[in-house]
Length: 248
Image 1 (cartoon, helix red, strand yellow):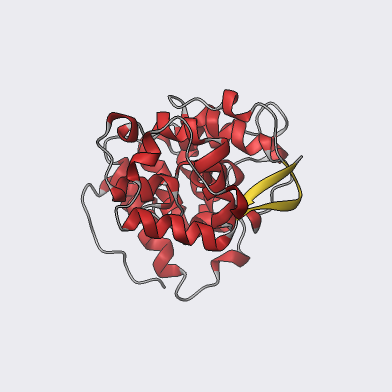
Image 2 (spheres, one colour):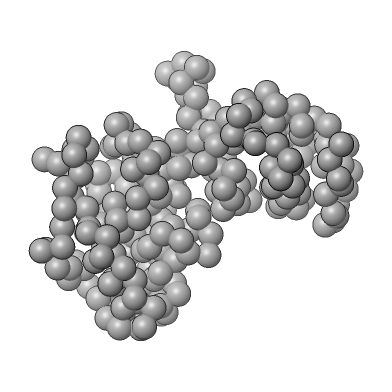
């Protein structure tokens, strides 16, 4: 069976209703009441069997791997499609999203909470329940490490909540950048302490600035590791917010 998807116009309608505070109680029901006439099919992408049962609302890492493995033929282009993810959050994996973000069940969810977790483009990319999980695996899985170690960087990314702040940046779509940054942090465990949050934000700021003068998508992981080696002294010894120095 081919994977179903919402029509783009219906996604806009659903989002507009949430933003207007209309029908928020629908998100607390056992099934989301959607318009079945607003469904399309995705060519060459098959709907996986048993995915909902593999998703664990208490374990983002295992859920991310299950979601990624469920769609082995997914392309980054399709993974950027709002309508695909919105269908999954509202239909196929609706129960999982409810359990992962239970304020809707408790009756405490406002329209911002629902938009952030059921739709693309919330306050942070990682906070969109499903797309953030898929991209976190896609950008860190490394088949070159062999079957037993291919998720080594993925495991490391999920080991610290602050590491996943990287997924809130455009840089996160560049697999080589993410792997390079994560490998640098793995090889320098002394940088993963109480100042991890500050260090991740410094790294993000540094590469954002560097991206103004270099097209970062052309560089491989070694470039990103090399750049961070230059800044290791700053990352190791500074313990507060500082401005990123001008790049040479």
